[in-house]
Amino acid sequence: MHNTLFKKIDWWIVVALISLFGLSLSTISSFSDIGGTLFFRQLIWIGISITAFFVVSAIDFSFLKQSKILMSLYLIGVGLLVSLIFIGSTNKGATSWIDFGFFSFQPSDLLKLILILILAKYLARRHIEIRSLKHLLITTLYFIIPFTLIFLQPDFGSAIILFCIWFGMILVAGISKKHLLLMFTIGLGVFMVMWTFVFKEYQKDRLRSFVDPLSDIQGAGYNAYQSVIAVGSGQLVGKGVGYGTQSRLHFLPEYETDFIFAATSEEWGFIGSLIILLLFGIILIRILIIGYRMHSNFELLFAVGLFLYFMSHIIINIGMNIGVMPVTGVTLPFMSYGGSHLLVECIALGMLMSFRKQSRFVFKDNSPDVFLQ
Image (tube, rainbow, N blue to C red):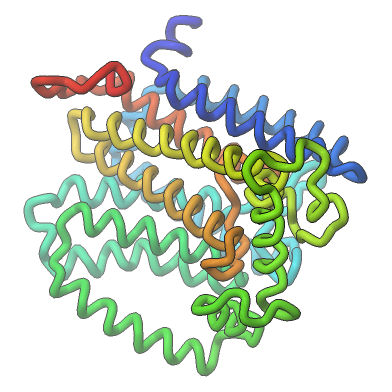
């Protein structure tokens, strides 16, 4: 059992994960009023997620290459999104959670992983005729159903992540640029209609702040403004753990979730921010290297989808923390407080390790250094 759990585990990823968990816990523990409770809960979720990572890595997921199983998972995921209309718990204006009492679950987190799997399966089998408009329309259908349900919650951040996953994967698969242009033209028209008849005023304010997030620091840009102050006040080496005034004095909102990067940067400074980016870089690079060495298109495309999933989360979250992107409520992988997204992220990486164990690696001549082994 020991050999099965730890066989061919990518320890670069594991070390980076543990380091990010440590930085997250150190920041959460410094919140004097609620830090103890949050720290204990997050520590439990980290333990559960790490366990899930190793357990999942020992499972043979070759059965996921069966279309019936993947379609069943997709329908279950969509069904969970639909169920939010009837049993969803509303928090901060978004009905995105199913509340089980002792914990809450966000179905959109699971849908991101399911979308990666079903697109990887569909695109892998049609890599020759992928430029056909038919296949673009089918992949768009897989994407647009959960996208619409999530957008209407409304959860604009998760909807953007789904778009990034879909767009990146079809681009890598070789979809015709002419067909993409057609789809974007249609999408632009749909956006204009939604801006006029669907978007709520606060969503419009967030989109307006995209061009200049700090233009309205008393309104839509308040959160971004306070986050920029927190990041800047950390300077080179930070104020020290427990001495971040922006978060401790509650000037910085959601400092344990959406703005944990700003809270950590205030305490650890520019050097701490660079360490976080380096750790994320290690995880992303290793995902691509593992995917490159897989023996099938399905596993390669799964790795690409996973890369896009984490990359879009990282760019959007850090972007809104430093005031260059609108605030959308997107979490920072492995650092933001919460168990739902953390568990799905570790399960996704565990599945990648499983594919790595089952796959026959394709090694190239003149292999890179030990980091690539």
